[in-house]
Length: 165
Image (tube, rainbow, N blue to C red):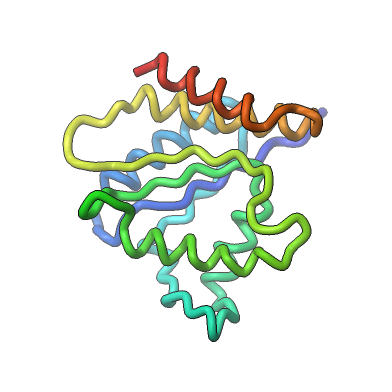
């Protein structure tokens, strides 16, 4: 029997009540429905120190983030929109992933990443569940066949999610 795929969700906000965390949880539920094992890395609970390239020795929290993301078959990333861009806390978490540059393969090479941004207004929960399911589907295809054209697979997945909206 094939092993279960691991999908890691990273995001949320520093707010106690977070629409972006709720959106991420919905997408992770879609990944679970598709048969994946999931892990939520909640920005608020990670309590990461600011990344400093002159002192990039990871703390325990940063190491947990780094290792979970590197070991994942696929990722779901979600950030609130602040002033038209991702939150500083989310950007800081991404900065900590810079230390993966020395790994083989480096960074998050060939990882499937579903991206979510949350702003005011109604959330498309069905689309988020589909996004989680698509991350699992594409990650499984990548794991089963290294010869697949990665970009074409990701474009196809994006089209499948867009048709749900």
